[in-house]
Length: 140
Image (cartoon, rainbow, N blue to C red; front, side, top):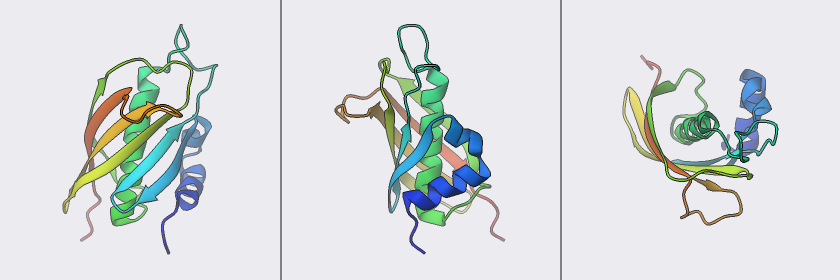
């Protein structure tokens, strides 16, 4: 079975419905990469219409998880080991996209880099940049 955004979105809707309720979704998958989306919710913003940092952080985290799925299959027990994010400018009044590229998959860890920008905007005009790792479940 080829992994598609629809399959990933169905998995998260069934396994982690709060993720979907919070506006996160998978919109693109290719080997070693994924694009996740955070819908804009005017009821969940900071003053000035700014998308809150924890929501942006969550987008980075989930995009890394989705990208790892393209390498190892859907794995609910792959969990965040670390994630470092650099906020470059505020996201004001728009949905966000995050593209994660897996940089390495080992026996116990998978690493990736994430670029986040405003939907409809220039992907090179970043809101944030992140890198992180997921611990992979023991396959033995």
